[in-house]
Image: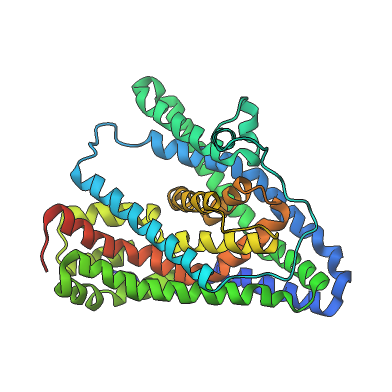
Length: 407
C-alpha cells in the first residue's frame, strides 16, 4: 500500500494561519492596549456565525451518519470487542488527564469574563439529567443551550430513517444533502477564524496585558507532558496486553511511519493508509485491520478525549468553578465519549465538543468558546498523534481478544 508523501505546509496551513492571526492580534493588543477594543466586533461576528451554524451541522451530521448504516450489518463478536476497546482506551486517556490536572492543578488568577455564569436550574439530579437530555418543545432543540438533547434527538431520527426502508429514501437523501451543505458552510466560516480569533486575542491582551500568555502556558505544559506519558507508557501497556513482549517489539518497530504521518498531516483520516500499511506489516488479520482502523479514524480519539478534559479544567479555573465534584467529573467523562464520536465526520469537529461542554456546564458561551478554540489549536499536533496512532494499538488488542493472535 502506498503512503502519500507529507506536504507539511498544506497539512498545517489552517493551523499556521490561525496561529498567525493570534500572534498578530497579540502584537496589536500589546501595542495599542485597550484602544484595540475597536476591532472586537470582528471576533464577535466570527463567533456569531459559528454559533448559528453549529446546531444544523450537528443535526445533519449525526442523523445522516446513522441513517446510512447498513441495516443488514450484524454487530458480531468482532464489532462488540472493537467498541469495548475503543471505549476503554478513551476513558483511560481521560482519566490519565484528570489525574494530571489534579497532580499539577491549573489555578487561574486571570478572570477573563465578568459575565455571570449561566446556572442550570435547581432540582434533583434526576430532574437536571432530564433537562439536559430532553426538551419539552421542539423549537427548544434549536438553542445551543440544548446541545445534548439535540444530539440524542438526531440519533433517534437517524435510526427512525434507517428503519423506514424505501419509503424513507427521500428523507435520507435530504439528510445527506444537508450534511454536505453544512460541512461546506462550516469550512467557509472557519476561513474567517484567523481574523476572528486574532481580533478576540487582541482584545484580551489589550485588556489584561501580557500576563494573559501565562494563562495558556501551564495548561499546555501539563497537556503535552500527560500526552507524552500516555503515548509511551500506556501504548506500551496496551501492546503488552495484546501479546506480551513480542507484541511490544512488533508495535514499536512498526510505529514510526504512522506516528510521523499523524504529526505531519495533523489528520486522523489522512493517517489511515499509513496505519493500514503498518497493521499489515504487524500481521494483524486483514478482516480485523480493515474494520478497526477505518472506523477508528473518525470515531476513536484518545488525544481528543484528553484535550476535552484539559479545556473543561481551564474553563472551570477561569470562571472560578470547582472541578472536583464527582458529578462534574462523570459529566466530563461522558462528554469525552460523545466528542470522540461526534467530531469525527465534521471539519474542525472539536469545536462541537467544546460547545457541548460549555452548554452542559452552564458557562458563558461568548467568553468560553474562544479560549477553548485557541487551546484546541495549540494541542492539535500531539492530540492527532494519539488519535491516529491509537487505532493501530487498538487493532492489535482487538486481534488478540477476538482472534487469539500471537506475534
